[in-house]
Length: 422
Ligand SMILES: Cc1cc2nc3c(=O)[nH]c(=O)nc-3n(C[C@H](O)[C@H](O)[C@H](O)COP(=O)(O)OP(=O)(O)OC[C@H]3O[C@@H](n4cnc5c(N)ncnc54)[C@H](O)[C@@H]3O)c2cc1C
Image 1: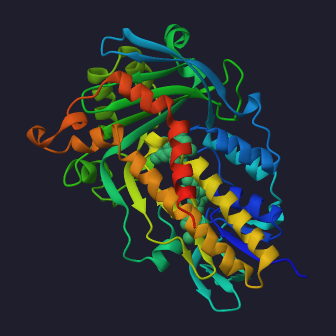
Image 2: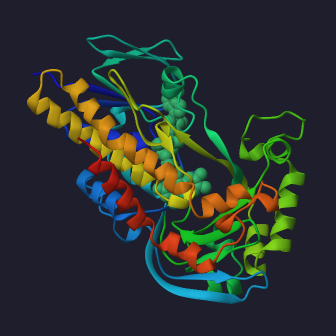
């Protein structure tokens, strides 16, 4: 019997996880990535969960010391830089670049096509065809849309669906460990650090360095700072470059105006602990990402399946986008191989099971991301008189608890989704 062929659109973490697991399920898999060059570090720290490590192990990737930086303390700094809460933790902070490298290095280059920008998908009862911008076509039995939050595959299949802006952005910065002043480094570098300016949330922690090193002195420091930005004035202003051109709801980092960068660094000095402001001031290219919720009403369309951020985007407070992509990929591979063993039309049968398992899971994660910090941050755009309960005031213990129980919350959402599968 000839192997079934799977076309994976998008060669980032979701696409590579799907490619590895589908190959193990017996598919002949090709990955198509729009970028012309191999993807490199995207300046992002990534929290991991046990489910992700278990799936990486299945692929043959050992989550050893080199995969991340181990942290043993969480603490919270007030505006003056004083520690007002400190707790033990046991977590490993990885990075987008480190995870990508391990998945990419284990994948054959002849089955990973760069510079392949999908334009549209065609399908009939016999197969599915991907049509690329350069006019080339590829045919398969299954097509996986792992092309991210702005998915071309999803836009073709669900043209009406638009991501919903949550009312705030995440400012992000990554610095080499050597750029952090030594006195501050000794005090906070190896701790997961919180700072809670009114209406905002500032997080900072170490991650593998620019070449994925985890040795002391060669690591990097990752900052994520959530700040409200109203969609009528602030966000459009942030997205307008120095020539006056407005770039939709996000802007390439090098085009962020100098006055915007000076403004965000001045805000750090005014609002967050001085140690954190000092580090943030040294960041060469801070950038921001608007926070969106995205819920697809369906994730399967004939022979096409959406996966990872292309299917659902949950807010980063759940810290589980990559783990979700891995669980989607595992469900897809298991469902299609189970169907292959029992049915003639295995792709359709397998995809129906994938939809039943992963649609409620994605929906549950989006709902989780809207709770707690998500609700508090979104509410900052409402007049104060209209805010209620946790929208008005937050308790640092609750913030830490939500953060510390992320893996447990993820597990509960997964169990609830599985329980709903007939
Ligand atoms: C502030 C912030 C913090 C986060 N923190 C965490 C965390 O701690 N832990 C965690 O697990 N997740 C975190 N996430 C989420 C996580 O980064 C994403 O969920 C995850 O990277 C999604 O992976 P993906 O492969 O589905 O999509 P993407 O990484 O977006 O990849 C899509 C790929 O498809 C390609 N592509 C797009 N269109 C086409 C086309 N037409 N043709 C071919 N290729 C195409 C793109 O070039 C890209 O390489 C965070 C997100 C944010 C914003």
